[in-house]
Length: 109
Ligand code: FES
Image (tube, rainbow, N blue to C red):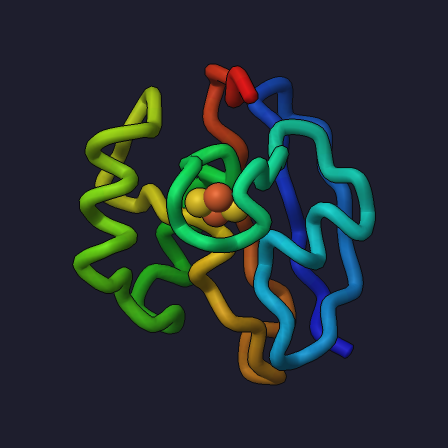
């Protein structure tokens, strides 16, 4: 089991257990993390699973592909250098303790 910490814009925290192989988005949806909507179900076409990878984890999470980067630019509010679509981050055992921060503007979907 891999633990992922989600931090809301107001500072509230929620730790979620994730299984290696599932996406960070799937773990968030399973635990009903506010702010992760995942309208497209993980197809990288909705941008409603936006989160920021904590600075301490940026180099330890595989970088986004071009499809993800384009969708972030086209569909996300409050984009930062650490913005990711959480459906595109595959959980591994090495990600135990991963920290994802939720953006201040919730998805509209
Ligand atoms: Fe739609 Fe991630 S769930 S882009």
